[in-house]
Length: 222
Image (tube, rainbow, N blue to C red; front, side):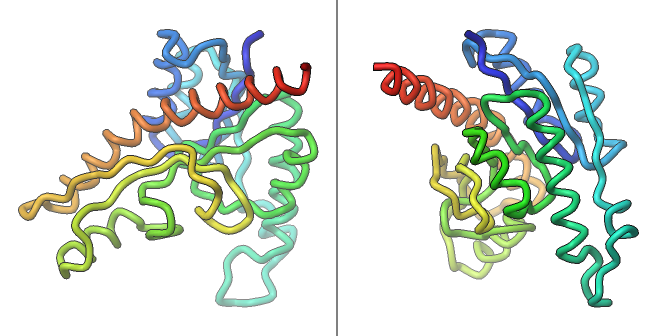
């Protein structure tokens, strides 16, 4: 039986392309990408999916902020808007009947309003993060690592695939990989090296997670 994958994206989709290529080549076995969802309508990742005849969907947070205005002027998107968005996002994901969800450069922090329905449906969520466990949680991870290297605080950085929990980038790591930072690196050099590592580790992480899920299902059957 083929595992159904839903991929969440926000931008160019190079990591999505790595997954598509791995599924097509059999590097990720017995898997099908059944849906790609983006929160940005102009994300080239959507075009990559369409080229590969994969169903796509678009869901943006902005209409929810208009429906549920933030009560804090300093916060663009309030809790009510985010949770309403996450409820609809979870529904859209679950309607595709996935076995696994992968956040491949999805620039949105999901709340329990998204996580809880997927947990109840026994659908694990994986996330790709350009840092090692416990380091540079959240946004601008590569930039912060580069700045710390320049200050002599770190010798290298890395990337990881982890299970998603409510605490941002704190879920159980599935696989990690160190990424070298060279003394003469510009930020763009490090970004390119990190992205190259991401394309490999996202495939490896999905393979490991699918194998663990299959093994767990077989144990339950026994």
